[in-house]
Amino acid sequence: MGDKTGIEWTDATWNPIRGCSRVSEGCRNCYAEGVAKRFSGPGMPYEGLIAKGGQWNGKVAVVGSAIGLPLRWVKPRRIFVNSMSDLFHDSVPFEVIAEIFAIMAVTTRHTYQILTKRPERMLAFFEWACDGEDYPYKISEAWPSGLPWEPATGGRGGYDNCGPGWPYENVWLGVSVEDQATAEARIPLLLKAPAAVRWISAEPLLGPISFSGMWVEFDHAAVHQNALEALDWVVVGGESGAHARPMHPDWPRTLRDECAAAEVPFLFKQWGEWSPRGPSALGYEPLEGVPRVRLTDLGEDGSALGAEGDNQAWMQRIGKKAAGRLLDGVLHDGYPGERLHD
Image (cartoon, rainbow, N blue to C red):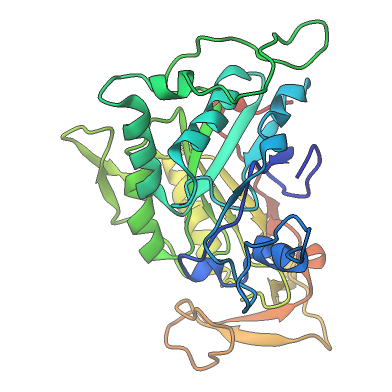
């Protein structure tokens, strides 16, 4: 956690909550879980949060010393909130989430990026925070105890304002999705949330996703629209790590093309461990002596060489750095509207 990160689409990470639990296939090779396992011994940061088998046990811990961290950061930056957990995990009390939102609300110099796999609890939180009103007064009343209430003046950290509008313009709400099923389950719930920016992270992308038939009611209106047109940003990436699964190149291409047609900003984060094995003309140079696997457009598991489907693609494991961020030779680095920092 801190002021520097290797995550391509953010500037810093902020982790006031530790602990989580798996909810879908995208969690199978969780990076945060691996880190927590290494530091779960007596006296270590993740003590009591990992089960004997090495997985999250569903318990969480509040890191009180971290809650006020963004107040101390003077320079504006994009901040990934709870990169090592899920802010809306069932074990995180609403009162704690409200304190975290209170920090975000008054540090408008920063842009906060939130991802969850639990949009149903996110909606429940906002319903609790608003309590029948049009404004989340429970957030306004939730300043963390022990934190000084000081303005950001003279090059020092502190709060920027104490009366932000709603929804907060500097808070981006998003959901993580990995395939069509999780996209169709989570995105409609995201679109019901009060947010200035709504986005998705399709990483790791483990199967095809298309918005062509995904129509939703938006902002409680009696009008249906395509779900993609209601989003402000789409991030796509393949899986990294020791047990990474390959991503068929047609999967990010579909999302790239649909975003272009809908004029939605698209960011291709990474191929991950696996890259297409050709064609060279698109920058996919075949390498010898590396693991390779054949995928079809429906192949969700790189070990299933006989997977049903069309458009076969040979993938090669060359590592995240070598695989890079170019999709068919092009860097896609789109961001939502005016909120992009220089």
